[in-house]
Image (tube, rainbow, N blue to C red; front, side, top):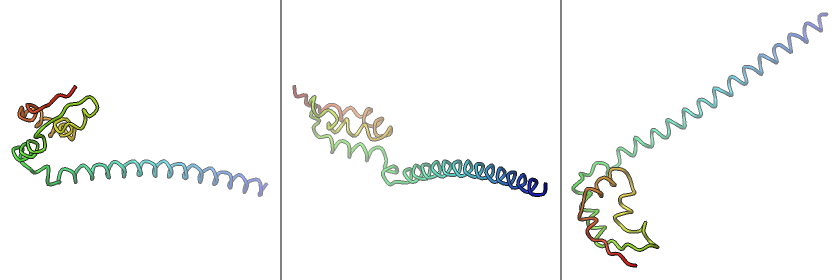
Amino acid sequence: AEISRALADVDKDLEDCDAEFRRLQSRMIALQNQRKRLEEYKVSLRFLQSPIRRLPNEIILRIFDSACEMNELTSKKLQTMPALAISSICSRWRDLAQSYPDLWSRIRLQL
């Protein structure tokens, strides 16, 4: 009887141990996910500190103007047209590029 009781106690302890192990595994997964989100947030915050983000729109438009002296539009290289490439970088650059008609007035179409 004493051995049976000891076996039952060990089984209960093993179940408790397994339950705690599962709880800790679940907590580790949650912490890993939280860490990943924090790392991604950190990267986005560092991006906001980048020097290009502090440049005034007028300077960026002058750079765009210089980069897009001539936009050649061919069916094979549509994405390489400077105005399209610039406008696909980020929403700020897209908005600036779309609002700057000079950028789009120098397009040469080759058929």
